[in-house]
Image 1 (cartoon, rainbow, N blue to C red):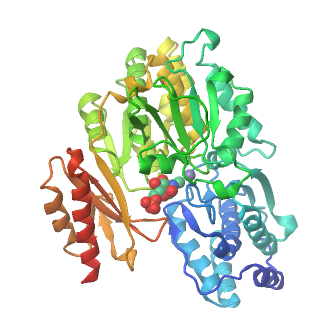
Image 2: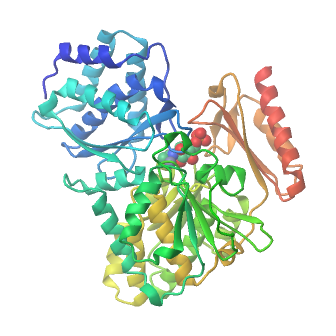
Image 3: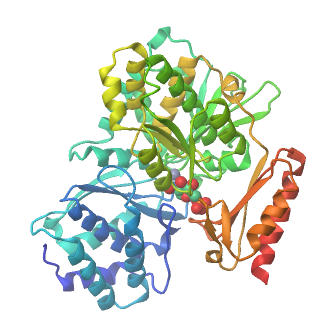
Length: 541
Ligand code: 16G
Ligand code: ZN
């Protein structure tokens, strides 16, 4: 076990951990808060990520500094496992406890607890922890990176830890590079991998595109810089792709009136500057601030906005992969399934089960839950949250079977599996997947959209004094606390045709979220207002 020098750790702790008497929660996807409060979190998280590496025999773990779609003044951190997926959930309570000890207790109390944790996880003498770091384009990121590396270097000593800093990356790029586990790999290797996968599926200039232009709104985030690098050597007509909201060097514009979250929640086009007249034959998409989410959309000839969100993406992939499975004659051997959350539009679930006859699972919100279900239940597990966060996982059995089969559809299945970033949802890779699917099916955005129609729906939030009073069961579809609220919610939405509603505490904000849907567009506001009243009254009593 690497010797820890308590004095050195104290000196660093004293210098970095200025935030005191504050309680942090490990939310849906790591710690997230106002950036000025995150010094203490970074200091402890870095050491824990290094300990996680030791438990994997010194393999690279990843650490990403980002607050995704949150406003510019926020930031956050998440740990990536050596396989590229998110930190093992069983570590979350420990990391939360240790971070909060640093903020709410003495240095000695924190140090002793950290030491116990370190000893309990460290078995071998000479394992040097390795980890990879990256951050998004927020102004606070370099300082937070410094807080993190200072903690790790003080704990292990500069020569006893290997830190590979990639600088600016999208979250999925960091996941992918962590998965590759190679010291000298960089974003160039990520680009080459996906450009090659694309080239195996795209016929080049002979290929007819079912849209005129592709506009990509990158939320003024890191996705813009990374997409620009990507498209330089991407086999695709350059004059057809246009980046909107690409000002990542101006972090105050990040996610403001643009990006996937804005488009999904506001149901409208992002703000952008373009002189081009919108045409129904143009296809649009929006990334979020760290480019792990994507939603598509278009405007019809009446200038009506049509959203093609995460549900639409998973149904598109399900349709396409089912077709390829059938053509390759592998359908009976490989289990295809879709994983959704309670936020999935009721009509998307209906379409997948009734029309495509593909099984659907529902999990709690948060990629780690969907990822796990897709991995454990299916050979081809398509998972997407309605907000555009998702990917497809292909099993070992899938890889073996498609490689053994030489028919055209089996080959296509194999190449398609390579275009997908299987470590986590990835706006760039998902964009490639959607484009090649539309091209293969010869579908316009309208063809894609008309497969099923979303039920009218509304997602709102209310601020309550204590969101932890709201506890759920049944994959967040029902409340168990506050006691007595759930039957009232059900009585309320049952009055509406195809009515459905659920209430859950947010894992990233101090708020409670309320989702409602029903078949009548003119009544959705009423349903939402009635449920909101029930929620507000339940905490007044
Ligand atoms: C995080 C999650 C996202 C989820 C969202 C819900 C990851 C990588 N990200 O951004 O999947 O939809 O939180 O936020 O898991 P909420 O708990 O505030 O509703
Ligand atoms: Zn994100």
